Amino acid sequence: MSAVDASTAPEDVPLSLRGPASTHVLVGFGFWLFLLSDIVIFAALFATYAVLSGQTAGGPTAAELFDRSHVFVETLCLLISSFTCGMGALAVQRSNLRATYFWFGLTFVLGVIFLSLEISEFAALVAAGAGPTRSAFLSAFFTLVGTHGLHVAGGLCWLLIMLAQIATLGWRPMVRQRLFCFGLFWHALDIVWVGVFTIVYLGAAP
Amino acid sequence: MIPSPDPDSIDAQGHAPGASSHGSWKTYVNGLLLALLLTGGSFWAASSDAIYAPGVPILLAVLAIAQMGVHIVFFLNISSAPDQTNNVLALAFGVMVVGLIVFGSLLIMANLSPHTMSMHELEMMQR
Image (cartoon, rainbow over all chains, first blue to last red; front, top):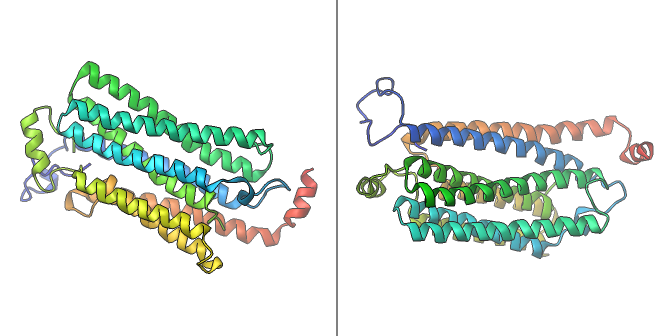
């Protein structure tokens, strides 16, 4: 993640003479740029939701639809999975195979619980006649929360692939890099979820 | 920072101050506790009657921004260290774009609605 590799570039050498940064610095920075562009996509969806949140077309409103205790459990799952993902990254740093499987396994399980809670919520809404076609508000809701859910589902697939790569390829530098990028991705999803539960479920939208 | 495959150098890097962008386990525990506190505060503020109702959205916004900051510092380990300048600059640009999109959209749409027909009339037209 660092812009300048502190271990190989002493402070007295000017930045212009240090040569290209090492691969892991570039990979971290490039992935960080990707995450920021992903967050810009979510910003557009947030803006859409905030503009359309009152346009219920006579249908159910946000206050009538959402169950806060349900969302609180989802939030806890995602938050704790972000923590276990960080502990997994530390285990990768120590090259501790058992701890890596334990923490990333826990991350996977918590992610699956989060996703199944979200799917059951969506199914209940659609069954109650509050599907994405009901009103502009519900279209915006399903687009925003559904996009986040798709990212979580993609992250879970990625995590499974990474666990398989640890098992088959071992501690290669590229495997460590991918695990590092996965950690950044997972933490970024949790940041987006903070916005989702504040604006959508707790009703902070204007 | 991604350590090299040699386990000895990993340990050396992991202990060198500022050489690792992973936090220690204490960083993650502190981050988790702070995030739990702020999440609990958000859900409490939204459900409780103890707070003056028109002030609740502002309090929720403050708590959410604080929690995003906690995630960035404690989980993503973005800091103001000199070797993080590029990351922080990219973050600042991202925050600016997000602010322009969200507040710009809200401002424009709020400004447009008095100039267009009421939502009720619009709904009547859409049927």
